[in-house]
Length: 264
Picture 1: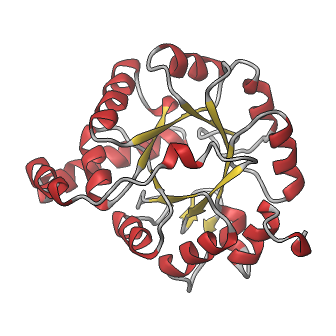
Picture 2 (picture 1 turned 180 degrees about the vertical axis):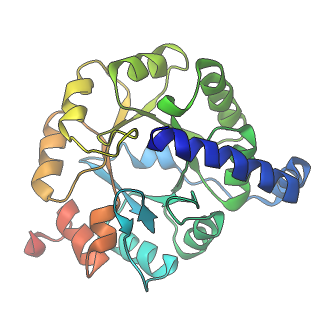
Picture 3 (picture 1 turned 135 degrees about the horizontal axis):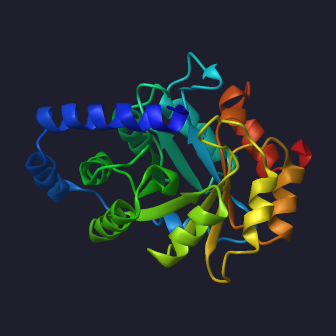
């Protein structure tokens, strides 16, 4: 098994456990109390490159990323620093996250929230909506064609925006042909071995039709990199580890976004 396959196998086990503890019917009932949606997709179409700032506790490649800061502290810093949206990584076994992190972010910030996880079962969509997510991530590499279509359509039924993540031409064609994805994330990280190559975005961008919202994910540390993305028409960037490691996340994000010229 490569890294992605191990994560998916663990995710399926965890979903079966959570479904037993909290039946789907319970989540469906809880959705009646769901708050108003926040416009995740719209937040990515503002002038310039919109930053999706991520809360990520650890990763298989980097280990523990940050100790001692609460979710509320970090998402507050992200919002003050100019983030357009939040990404909350909720996978537990390998990334140390949870739906409680998402709930805490929802309570502490007014920004739209992406639940970043390895979604392989419709049950996870109901969890996402109940916990306060405005959008979910679907990773094409983790899903067969039928499940990709099923999850995409069910997310729409639940009023969840979808960021469809690809890493190769084949995955991009699936995202365009099977589900006509409106928001496409190009992951510069290869999930089979977690290596990063930011040129992946530039290689795939030419194959994406006009009118799609494009988000580049992973490998960004400097404002000049966002300038390069803006010049070629990328709409958003997802940044996690570099912000999580920064001594002051708000200052780091202001520098990255160019929100405060004195910090460039």
